[in-house]
Structures are given as structure tokens and as C-alpha cells.
Length: 258
Image (cartoon, rainbow, N blue to C red):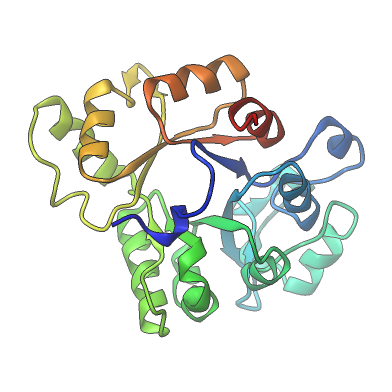
């Protein structure tokens, strides 16, 4: 049965990668994973936002990709050593910091794809996501961390499990099984999506066999990170179900034409 996360939304899915930062946004200093970037994605018509979470020194789960502030703020400190208040001050001129709870409250019709970047986020996420499990997909490159995060949401009283996409080890196993024509039914149990790059170095991750296998077991396939319109069209023609893109505005225009 299809998870409610995918119900009553357009296909192929367009997932705004860390929100949407256009050239105008960059000129005004907007950062990814901020209230402003999420608002831009929403205004562009993106029904899904892909984002990431870290934990501050105060134990708040905030939307931020990197372990440290170096790439965005030129600050080498880990997010885990910075207070939430200080982060808010840093983000104030760059689009605004959001906790996971604030994002869910501020964008009540948006479906969120949340990558759990640290084990410290697992338990705090449970009660925050429990009442939103129908519109949240929980994922991580670590399948162990992903499973624990899903379990935390259920322990917190969710009426259903959140959607989830496979981590690196499960994706690799499904890729091998599909090439050998073995059944991945056990691997794909409770997996709603495979979110993958088209290639990983010299290895082609997306193959016709993997796509057929996933669809046979009711699992969607989403490709990241796809920014060129020609690639968006090509991948959708191949049969992928979703595109994760830095340019969700272009993807919505190209793939969801009336």
C-alpha cells in the first residue's frame, strides 16, 4: 500500500533540495535550509522539501546540512557546540533558522524529506514528527540511524510509521540483487523509496534492472541532485518517480506543465 506521504501529490515528485535559493536569493545572502529558501520552494510550487537536521548545544533539532558552520558561515565550530540562540543570530540575515518543529508548523501543507545527520537527533525527533508521520519521510545514509529514527517516531505515539528511504547499505544490496535477478523483498520491506544518484564514480547506481525491481515491490525511485532540464526529462522518461533538485522552480515548470 502506498504511504500517505505520496498521496494526492503530483507525479513525478519534485523535491526541493534544501529549499530553493535562486540567483536573486544568493545576491541577497539567503542560505540553504532556511525559512526563506523553504518559502521560495513553496512559492515555486514544490510539494516536497528535502532537508537535513543537526542538533545544537541546547539539544534543539535544527535544519542544517553540514556538521560544522565552515561552508556557510566560515566558522569551524561544529553545530553541536553552538547555542540555538547564536545560530538564530547567524541566520538572521541569511533567511532565518528553523527547527524541525518550526518548519512543520510554518509549512503545514508541505511534505518533508528529512535526512538525519547525527544520532543525537534520533530521540528528540520522535515526538516532533509523531503527529506529522503522514507527511514526513525519514532517511539517512546510515540504515541503522534511519531505522532508529523511524522507531523513535513510533515510540512517541505516531498513528503510522513515517515514510522512509533506504540508506547506503540497503541501496547497495538492492543494486546487487537486481543485477543478479534475486528477490530483494526482505530488503525493501517498509522501504518507500530508493533515493540515489545516477552514478557513484564509475558505478552506475540507476539501472533498468534496479528500476524494474523497485517498482515491482511498490518502491519509488528518486534521483539526486538533478539540476539540468534535459536530465530531468531524460530520467523521467526512464521511469524515475522523483527528482531532487536545487532548481525546484525549473523542475516544477518542466515536469508539471498543465
